[in-house]
Structure formats: C-alpha cells, structure tokens
Amino acid sequence: MTNAAPHQGNTGKVGSAPAPTAQNRWAAPRNYRWTELWLLLFPSLFMLLGLVILLIEAGQHIDLTAKQLPPLDAFTPVIGLLLALLGAHFALIFVAPDADQTLLPIAGMLSSIGVLMALRLGRDLNQPTLGSKQLVFVIAGLGLSVLTVWATRDLQWIRDYPYTWAIIGALLVGVTLVHAGGFDPTAPSRDVLSVGNGALSFQPSEIFKICLVVFFAGYLSENLKVLSDGGYRLGPFTLPPVKNLAPLLVVLGLALLIVLFARELGLAVLILGIFLAMLYAASARLSYIVMLGGIFAVGAIAIFRIFSYARDRVSLITQAFDPKVYTGAPPLSSYQIVQGLVAFGSGGVFGQGLGLGHPTFVPAATTDYVAAAFAEEFGFAGLLALIAIFMLLLYRGMRIATRSLNPFNQLLALGLTSVFGLQTVVILAGNLKLMPLTGVPLPFVAYGGSSLLANFIIIGLLLRLSREKA
Image 1 (cartoon, rainbow, N blue to C red):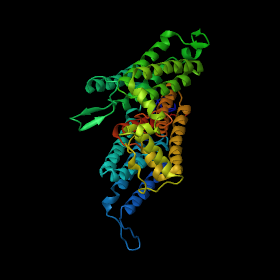
Image 2: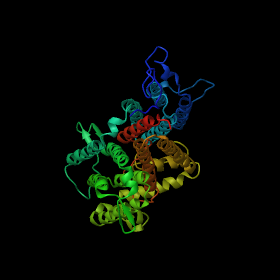
Image 3: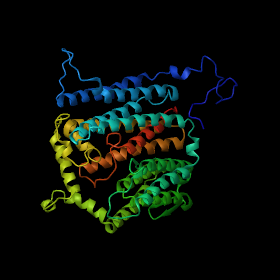
Image 4: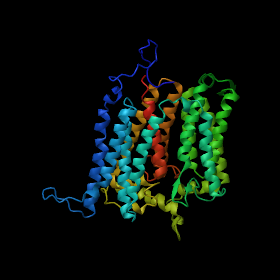
C-alpha cells in the first residue's frame, strides 16, 4: 500500500513512479510549508512573553530604552523551543512536505504551555531545573515525531501485524508488574519501569495504549463487513459471530486486567473509551456499545466491592468537604481535591497573573493538577483557551480520519485522536471533582517524559496519515 495518490509514470503504468531526474529530484522540498511556519510564531511568542513576565516578576529589571536586558542565557528555554520547532518544521519539508500543517503548531503551542508552567512551578517548588527537563523532553519528542513520520513511509508493516503490537504493549506492562514485585490492591500505582537504579524511568502504559490502537484498527478493518452485518440476535441486541468478536474481547479483557494489576484505573477507562469509539466507527451499531458498556459497568461494580483502593477513590469525592475528614491529619488526596478547587476559584475570570498566584499549594501541581495551576494564574478565560486548543487538535485529527482512503487509516487516525480527547476529559473531570482523580496526564502540558514522548509519536503517526488525499 502506498499513501500517495496513483499517478502516471514514464512507463505508462498507473502507480509507477517517474524516473528520477535532476528536475524532479528536489521537487518535494519546494512544496514549502508556509502555513505551518507562520503558525509556529504563536508558541514562540507565547513562550517569549511568558518568560519575560516571569523574569520581571522575579525582580529582573528590563528597560528597552536604556538597553537593560537580561543575560542571553535567561532566554535559553525560548531559544531551545524555537530551534526545536524550526528543526522539526524543516525536517517535515523533506520527509512529509504535504502533511497537515497545523498539527505541529498545535502540539508546539501546548508544549510551550507545559514548559512555561514547569518553569514557573519549578521556581516555587525549589526545582529550578524542572523547566529545562521539560524542554529536553519536548525537543526529544519533536525528534521522535519526525522519526515516526520517516519510519512509517509505508504503513503496511504496521497494518499487517496487529496481534504483534498488542503483544508488545502487553509485554511492556507485564515486565513492569514483574519488576514491581507483585500485586497489592492497597498500594499506589506501579506503572513505572526504572532502569539503572532509578536514573531512568518511564511508563510502559503510554506505549501500551498506542499499540492497542494499532491492534484495534488492524482487526476492525479486516472484519468491517461481519461487524456491520451482525451474526445473531440476543434479545434486543444484534451480535457478530463469536469467532469474530471473541479476539477483540479477549485482548480488551487482558488489557484491562493488566491495567488493573498495574493500578492504573484511569488507563482502564481510557482503553475502554478508545475501544468503544473505534468499534462504533467500524460497525455503526449502537447495540455493541450498550452491551459492552453494560459489561464494563458490572465489572466496575465488582472492582468497587473487591478493592478498597477503588472505594477510597470514590469516597474522596463524596467526603472531600466533610468536616470529619479534616479531624487530625487529613488524607493527602482529600486535601489535594479541595486545594485544586480553591485554585480554580482563585483564578476567577482572568486569573491571578503568571507568577502571582499560589498554585504550588496544590499537591502534584506539575502533573495531576497542572490544569488547576494553569487556571489559577490564567483564569477561566485561559482555561477555555486551553480547552479550545485541544478541541482544535481533535478537529484536525478527525478531519484526517474522514479524509483517509482506507478503513485501517481511518480507524487508526480516529483511535489516536481519541487518546488526546479522552485523556483531556478524564483529567479535567478529575480536577473538577466530577469523577475520581486518575493518573492520566494532560497531554503535552503535564510534566513528564513518558507521556510527552508518546504524544509526539501520535502526532507523527497523524502527520503520516494526513498525507493521504481524499
């Protein structure tokens, strides 16, 4: 399979490539990505303006008329981000000149917010290198995104081995469980694999969810007709033949079990949501969604009754403002929920101002509660703008899915885009006390290398899928 539209070559055969000549050898780079270049000004200017505000707030005197400026190394985060974005931009000119020109600026804008928040929070947390580390993750992610575009010039090697990707993802999480030394239903999450005595750590679940999306896309695209037609009826439900549905249910069940043992309940919700979205897109049958949703609801009730950890998570929501909770030493999670809501309320409409709030009063402000920290200093208007950027990312991803020419590419683009959408909804709902808080990070904004690298891999895959013209 080739992603390019068929064309008439020198041999007269449809789909054959023209013989390379001095004239057409450099044709691709001439298709310059001007829209992308201009859009990259937004994350660059946002980062520059935010950094200047932080410098002024920290007591740095800046006077343009007297030519009193901070030292050049104070602008290292801006320069580093700008050079990384420009490097990715110029690489795409040669690797994928006809790919979508808005995905990179959108990811760059969200990443600039993440770097700026890490710089700001790191100062108050006495972690001055926090912003620099996040910037390194962004630079590595941009390089990985371009590498993904280059490595997936032909998607056939991904499409033809769906079970292999599911097994790879499951093995990654399995290794983490073995490394953790067993399962404890009352212990915190164990979805972290450390290498070199903790010098390097990452979360295999971030790669696991991408592998599952590839598997779902591959299997569903091969069984579209059977899933759409259905095989037999079970009461009000129309079901496909067992031999076609069973592999999906087995892999999904194993995925949820692995996630449950890894203590990542938020990831379980994320995987189920992605699976249901892709299944409905492939079959257009609501009965499948109702049936599987019911099965999941029964499983959730069982988990709630069996595992004390799940009951504690739910009780934190219902008892967050109960005076009895604060007698003696309050539980950290209840304190975290309350402080997060206080941060949202303190921001008001337009926020306290960058560097002027107290977002570090919220535990885990750089990771789980980065949205609350952002809302306190940028206000409700800033939070709406952040959500709008995510909605634009979802729109571009869904547009790529609708313009793809074959079912596998459509389902893959849909599933990868759903990862961003569901993660954003789950973590924002947790911050706002609408559902139990989970360890799902806010894409591109929350501090952490594993999530950021996985997000840029998804951007790279979407860029490759966007090359296909409808």
